[in-house]
Length: 209
Figure 1 (cartoon, rainbow, N blue to C red):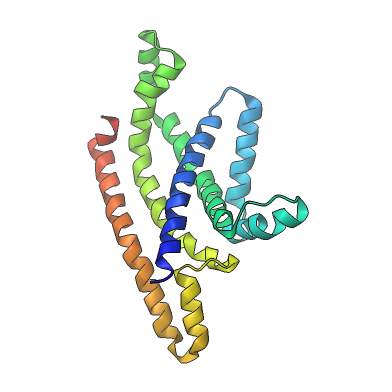
Figure 2: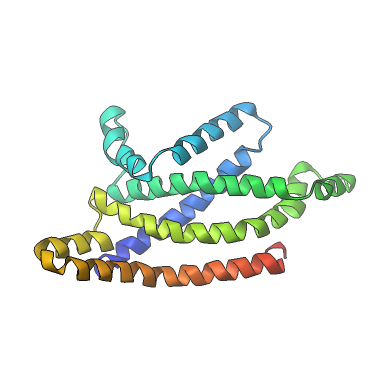
């Protein structure tokens, strides 16, 4: 129970920053500016192509040593690693969902003399969000599971306390890790419910209202 607060705090911060990064990177991938597209593409490929654990260690250990860049604390190192990693994955969902909107929608809004910003805000984006919802819900659960990695940089989350209990009594290791598993499952239940609601919303078109 002592570790629940840290796990939930890291998750909530990662969700906010991760989705923010997803939308920023997703829109940048569609920009007319080639430098912006290339830079964002480089970020996406690096964070999708390398391990989250390695990224976590780089942010917490390597950056301060090699570049003198401090991310602030192990909390922010953990949040940034999870956010940047999943933000890279989800940015492709944002990009592909926007591109999946029928071209006729854009052509019709152009015929109505809408600006590019108006077309995106009023016509394309609401339809794209509806397509994003199911995958976004799945990534909520994945981010929760990834919070267990912050114990590797000394954060006192659920797994951290589980390891302490296990090390003090090795014979109880199966029981301890069963309880750790149970805690994560209980925390995941609201996210699973939310994911199902998001899937239902996407099918009913609620997101476009």
